[in-house]
Length: 183
Image (cartoon, rainbow, N blue to C red; front, side, top):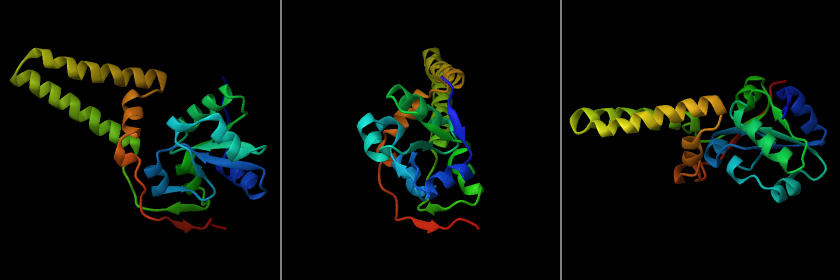
């Protein structure tokens, strides 16, 4: 499936004239940390046809995430539900860099960074346990390394999906403040 993409500035024009809806598919905590002002938050693991139909009605459906990867996955899922979705190129990072209106709240650690920390810690602990106790512990870094290779090839990260469900990624962050677009 080919994913349709749109530049942040063009997406903002659709939103200004009311012909589109912007759905941010990151975790609630990531969303609260920084998001495009008009975006709704429906995390990728909670996308459902009825929620999308309620949110967008007959409007153009635009997805946004941190940098574009999860938005692409959301487009694939929505297309299977019968929508014609569009991914915002470069995600929230490009949206903010383009001077478009964002809301900022409590800054949080990105899901990608959490995955790198968890994978690195598991590899280090597995290797240390193999040195100190038994070579059988080498299975831990082998499994984690294999998982990272699989994630790189398929652009699907099991560890990331599990971390997204953790309580610290579900809690509401502090209230957000609007940062108007640069004109």
